[in-house]
Image 1 (cartoon, rainbow, N blue to C red):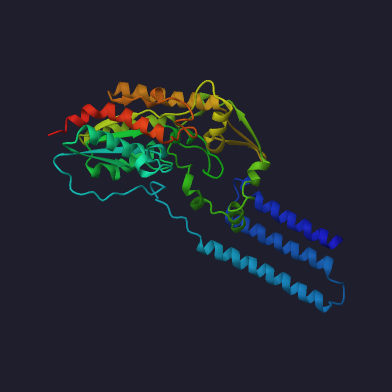
Image 2: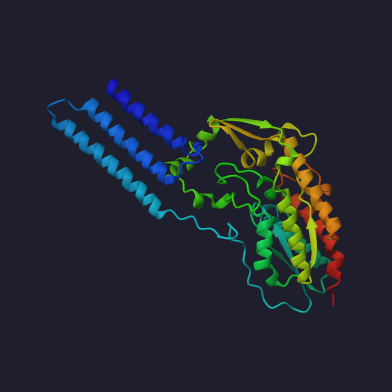
Length: 389
């Protein structure tokens, strides 16, 4: 019985190490692999001392010894094969590869509108025909049937103002847009933090700490952890940790400065290309009084703005902190737009903050996307009219 208890103990230690892989921020995949190999060797030594007689080795023990060696060899071969075959492709400048369009020659009666932003602009959770840029094109085309309206959706999941600035200057401007519409805030907000699984190291103003969807390229997961994350056991390490909402002070949202600088630079580049530039404030669900269901639907703070207090405790901003941060970002955006005479579409103030429009902190159902397209269409209608021939 003791022998099997020792086997169970070693198996438990192994499972604990696998599950706690991401509880040690400084450990690398190579260091973990070496540690795992040492653990296996110690396991083999311990079991050999426990199971093997001092003098004679019966045939059944020799068979089990060979079996143990084969198992160790197979595990190491599997680990080596996993690391040799793992690929995590990403755009080295923009992380998530953006949409790239091959457009025909621009007609004389065509007006091109470029929509820039993150996932709330991309709208990938909605059907193509329900996304706000597509609905915007439909509305404007119906208002001006004598001209061709083309709305190009360059929104992309995870994109911050820095991604948008890079995308526009390296690609978007070559689509020859007449009007550029930009909506972004939430992705810049959570760049203030360095949550495990998305970021490496401390915050910096260049956002270089935050890998987001490219995180596996920075810190490849171990074979065991990769397998566990594809099962119902994958969330166990997070569930074992204590998580508590706390108040985050507005001064802690350090990405506010870069956010405003990027938007300001984007406005200058668009103006240099003789295109009209419009800023859209980020619609969101945050409000002073939220019911239990609305609380439950908001997850950005807990997942993307958490900070580790100790090895088993995470803190994350409560919803009042998220609302205060969003209000601060939008206030500074409005102030910058007013100072630089940039037309601003205050969708955050106009869109109702209910679950009819939002399914989480900022992402919209189709009624929200339709409402947003209506606001933008009304705001840029006069600018579109200038291109009517």
